[in-house]
Figure (cartoon, rainbow, N blue to C red):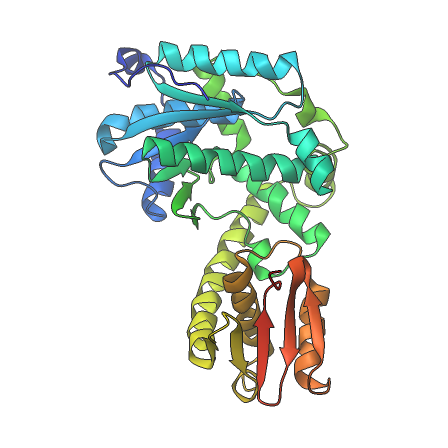
Length: 354
């Protein structure tokens, strides 16, 4: 990783064209979701693409008003050889002109995807956020700003719906999310891609185009370039705004159900001396199906740390275990975790150490 230059005042920002509507909408999003407080130290993810460049300049324009300390992080996923290295040089040159501190890194995501048997998209996302967290820890920043916009939100909702998801997934990407000791914020989440591109043109800002965003081998790109235009043309020209609004509504409902289910989970479960999670069968069976499902998800997330590879079928198997299977039956879960049915309790345990 490499760092460049201290943060200094940016006189050129006085000449930056900030359309009133654009500025007000970003500020409205920040206020609505409490994304920023005075004096925040923020790490900004910069790929060199249009969205991240506009995010960086927007936060710079808001820097004085919020007394922000800004740092920048750029990760080379090693997808595109010399083009990727060109992205890094572009980001370094931009932050040098802006007198901002940048940390750059590179990770061989194609190799990681192959080793773990996951998609390139998933490997890149996991490694990117891991890099951001490590950089934020080094820089002492509390928040990580990501450039997702309203169009990204619509694409995410459709992608999750196609793959199969519940209310949490249909809620899309949260404007503010706690993630392993840090807070991820998305100040542009209510701004359309068109508005962002207009901002870029109005200010004649440079950016890098990633050709992989045009390749239809990636699910998100197929949704962006094929499915959404089809829906706009044949069903609803405002489909992206409709999907983003739906996500916001579902996210609010999900937050309420999540808080309620966590209270129930704490009331009917405990950790035993072996670190296993013990849930009282009689009490969980009294809960509505939606709450039962969330209680079991809460238990697995507490024990495992995440819900990766946990599917609807696993939930159905746990329901069957709870209601119909005999004592001492077992449901195997991803990562070596399992749920065992005893006389009065469900026992959720992790992999046995050898």
